[in-house]
Amino acid sequence: ETGPQDRLPVDLNELAAGVQGCRRCPLWRDATQGVCGQGPRNARLMIVGEQPGDQEDLAGKPFVGPAGRVLDDALIEAGIERSDVYVTNAVKHFKHEPQGKRRLHKTPNAGEVTACRWWLTSERDLIRPRAVLMLGATASLAVLDRKVAVTRERGQALALDDGSAGLITVHPSYLLRLPDPVLRAQQREAFVADLRRVRTLL
Ligand code: URA
Image 1 (cartoon, helix red, strand yellow):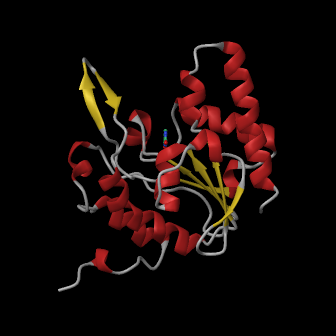
Image 2: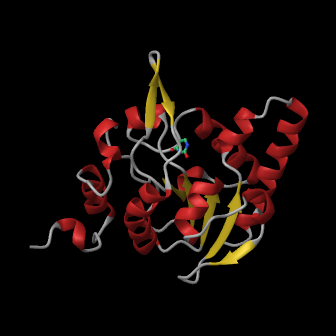
């Protein structure tokens, strides 16, 4: 017997339903819901994050929390309309552990990234973007299927297997975590510069 998850989804609705029912790894157990990508079917740019955070898990939408605000502001500065972008994550369920009343983000492991690559590949097949921007090491691992040193490889245009362009940059949460305001401002500028570069690949 073949289940609906054994063939590629025919459209984004089927993909969203598939993600909700996904049992490819155990992360669904502790998550509120799966969080699919969001954006137009014909988006030229796809942005890939790591996984939904606390707020995304509750809202069912990617990048609506603090990291999403950093991303939104940087997109505006780079002249990219978020509504033109398909924004998604490498892993579709929120991995976390309790810390008091809070749910602390835990980085997904390589097995979880591999299990969830099915959905990311399906999204790429359906959207066929011209460029894929990878936010951080987990997104890069998911898209490129290899370990990436983000600070060394960021900002260079890469040729992806499907003919689209790839670009690695830092994750916006990295900017939020930088304690030194000068360094943070510098790194934010570099992030916006990477967004401007990806714009030239569209
Ligand atoms: N961080 C991510 O990588 N993705 C989200 O959707 C939110 C925060």
